[in-house]
Length: 394
Image 1 (tube, rainbow, N blue to C red):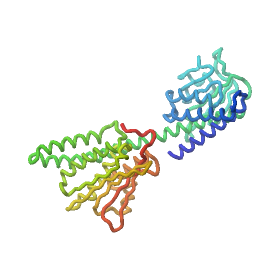
Image 2: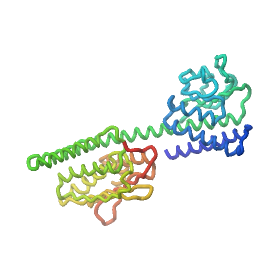
Image 3: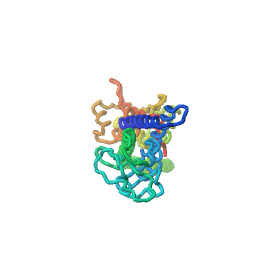
Image 4: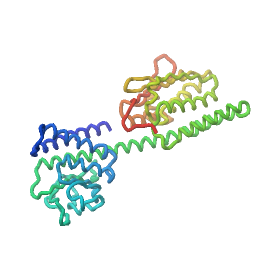
């Protein structure tokens, strides 16, 4: 995704420079024509981005076409899905509207090249548009729509105008492609979260209810409290509208999980939590920390008759947050750790969490497994940013 975003930003610059050059060629009465032209072009190009990152639709095209008209210098601009106008802005908007057939404005072209319409097909007697430059929007050899820049003059259009429209069309196509990449990543993250919930369900529910059942007769009040903890954790884990939560929320429900596990293990499970308060507002995908804690309990402590120590540490790294979940069990060998992070292990916990973190925050974030030679135990390290645009807690 970072590569695609880099390409998009390059296209923004190219489109801005081309538009600024066009604006400089036009006679304008300003004190600083170069600075004003560049500022107008860059503003128009960057203003398009937030809208088209939602994909190509009537809703996203409507606010984008006005900025595209400034960027291209055209008398009117339309975005289409190939068959109908998604949005139209400029001269002729009294009879060219969203939802109208494209054939009412230009002839159909099937190739993926930018071309000039020297005479438009509009039959409205008062239409001021006489010619147009048409830039197909192509994503991975698939034509998804068209950018139409209309002009009020007949005759040959200038080469620089075609170049500007071509750059603007490439920018629109890149933004639509980025929206598809992001949507695919979100669908993958949702699927992985569903898989993780499916894994948590049978294992955790069985163990938790077994622990509660063991206290019903001997310690009924404690059994009642455990049932409340259990119900609150299940509600949190399976809430459908919580893709992201704060670290404070995740820790709160990890504590509920550990309360239920301590009911099973008693003094065999010792817990130490040290989290810098400065990192508590950080946002992360729901159920990112709990699977790491569950792995430490199952693989580092459960198999040992004497139990062990589980540690949760949160560090402030400036712009990033580091979370460390450790146990003092037998540890994991590097090959098994690498397989688990890649999702090739017998469970899906580590690979699932790592994949969702990378899909949310990008490369450079996620999980790593540490083990000191000769020292007992395993430490899983999670790194995430303190803030990422578009990632907000529900």
